[in-house]
Image 1 (cartoon, rainbow, N blue to C red):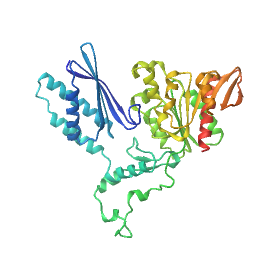
Image 2: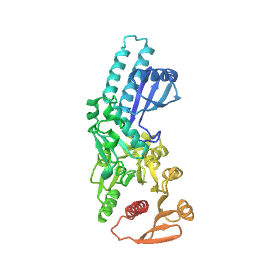
Image 3: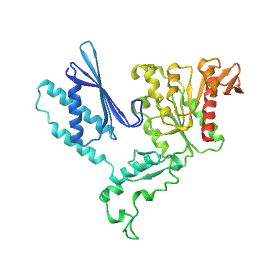
Image 4: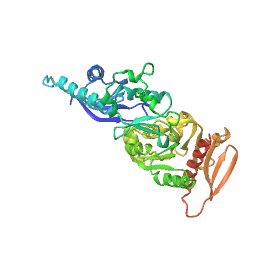
Length: 394
């Protein structure tokens, strides 16, 4: 063994390491190759023409094995992952004294792939303007660029601008343009109506039944809801493009969330309801799993709400990262975190005998539970609904 790849993760959305797409590779070697990795990574990125940022390598040893965790952000994580495979193969060949590897040809092929996948300049400028305006934008599975979510979204076909090329023409400029000139791309979009409809992101383990009950409650209020249960990254992204959606509820597949990142740039309500034990070892431990599944907390709007299960210490530990007011849930109102949260004027829900209790500061509202109800599910659904209505009212 010289150096080999144990796992490569391509993050297509925000994740626990960075809010931008990126690549994380875990490598195993019989020697410390950190310096060589840095050098070949920089050289390969320059030759491929791939933009990378925040490159970071952590190394640790266990016995005779040296483990390396290589991370960098890039707008093209799939190309970045291929590049990592190339540089690891190159390092292995160099370590073995094999000079037959055609590194130039492989890098040239990657450069061609990068060019083919690159968006036209005008579309990149449009996405940059959307970001500056606080409007989410992403590339859809069909190749279109989605600007905004749901009923406040619009789709653009980049192929139209690849045909025109990226060179500026007189028709692209306001001053001196012909009165019959085609307007610039940015001016074609109705920016005043573009943005994000209310988005709710639910994560954890077995949360689909709870989310489905919450969606049903929203629809009883005649809210046009697009929802996806146990949704993969791609399914969630598809849901965001629904032009009829006045609100979007995403119950995320924890495996896809762990290994691909968050499919949204922003949300109005986030909820982390539990932690699937079967993923703890893959994530590196319970605390790391909570950080990975709770990443939606970081993109919740300032006027939004975050629902956290205080009975899980690893979930409760994320409370300090919330940019918005918290709604804590627990089985007992005597939970120390709930008591402190309520004393500070915060909102909490808990169970008391045959009722669920919605507490806002010192005030309490009892919600009777029928014998056939799952008390914890009802509590979680009520917390989601309360968080949605509180955030939507703002």
